[in-house]
Amino acid sequence: MFPLQPTWSNTRINLLQRCPRAFVLRYGLAKLSKHHPQGQVLSELFKIQTPWILMHQTIRGLLLDYVEDYVNGTIWSEKLVRIRFKKDYKQAITARNQRIQQLFHHGIHSSLFQLAQAEEHLIEMGVKSCIDMIQHNSLIRWLSHGSIERKNPVSSVTNENIRLYCSPDLIHHGRNGTTLIKFYLYGNLNSNERTHQASLIQSYGDNESTVALFILHRRKWYIHTTKPVEHQRKGAMNLIRQDIQHMETAFSKVNKNNDLSNVPLADSYRACMMCNVRFMCPSRHGFENAKAEQRALMCRWG
Image (tube, rainbow, N blue to C red; front, side):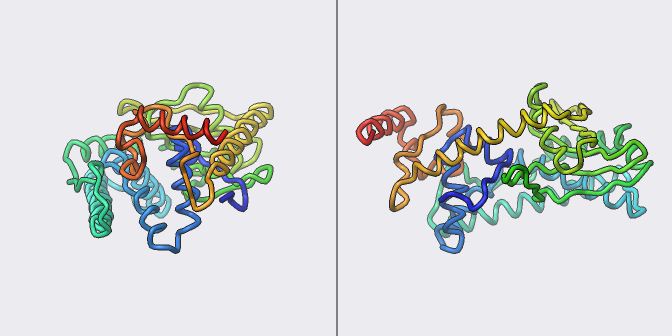
């Protein structure tokens, strides 16, 4: 079950921290059985996102499209931003509903998998966030001077034999060097987290590259600009190596015949509340009972 090359991403480590069981299902069993019908269904489960997350994904996609069109000579009006966001968000909701309906055909039902509509208040929030960013002085300056390009979000770099997925959204080249721009849309980052992320993003440039983190927090954009130095880059990679060890430990706990009973459950019930695979987890019958039963099994095997 170990990957051919150690792989790290924010998505992977965040899921591992929330629940090792869900992490192994998504990045272990689903990957290994991707050509099997059950493996394909398991992969689809993790692709289903809430309307709230889809709104933020639409914000990122629209901003990148805006920058790309701007570079090609097409500047959007606020009206066009509104039209495009509404269209893209509705398409994302439709795709989500289609995935859920496919799961229904496989006999999979969960209270989390409810068909949804594109709610107007989420559309308004998304449109405002896009317009606020398009009108941000820093973005206007980058668009006006030098060159700027979008980066594939699934592009990776290899550092110390570890494949990292921590791509910037945009790369700007100007008189003062290269700036790597990243949009963070899900809550705030503290100072240490910003330094950690910036040190990893800098891997997509060089040691002189500046990293600009745009953080959307409580519907407002905040920009943090930094140029990580050597000891910060080393510190970030030390944390990555520790994360990789925790990932490999989680994978190693899968017994023969894909028995997951020795893979730890989440530490908190809060992690289960929005989990797409809770319906196939022992915690569905009661989180505390499931944890107690697993502890008893692990003591028996230990």
